[in-house]
Length: 222
Ligand code: 5RP
Image (tube, rainbow, N blue to C red; front, top):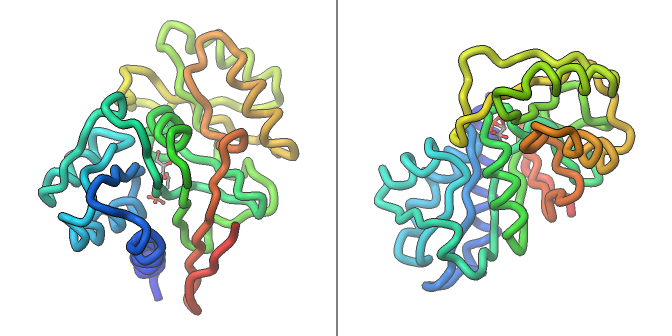
């Protein structure tokens, strides 16, 4: 079984998870990345059984529309029963690292609005301690060097992600070398640096359910 097969399988498990709980008025939050793309492709089978979606990136919105699935503005939504998205790392407390695809800010906003955040990942994303995957930080462009100096003081080694501009017009710094033993504290500390828009630690609002695919099946962690 390839990693992509596991991504497909976990996307299918998420679809089964929500299938019986959505109705004609439901608006579903949709994440970004290759695992989320599999979910989008499979969600097309449920078209007509929910009202619309809210997307965490322009790329996901385009893919959803390509399937004829309506994408609406988050500001036009009162209730979001589910947000389904992948992750770059997940620990057993369901804290995550996200933003490998540079969509972390919108992902964090949609996750914050959702009643249930279902994280879908293959087993390679499961870790004991977050931080091996460099932590993506979205930064206002003029603050780049200032924020880099502050991140170095936190013990990290920030690297400018060349050639990437987020959907919000900002840049990404990837912070290497952090061993994150207290994800909530690190999330809050990074957010307090002026010029940081968001960081990719999802601990203050972690996942509610982690579906983790391996060659032997999909585990459910909550
Ligand atoms: C995008 C993300 C993705 O969820 C994360 O990068 C995982 O991607 P993939 O499903 O392709 O492994 O946070 O910003």
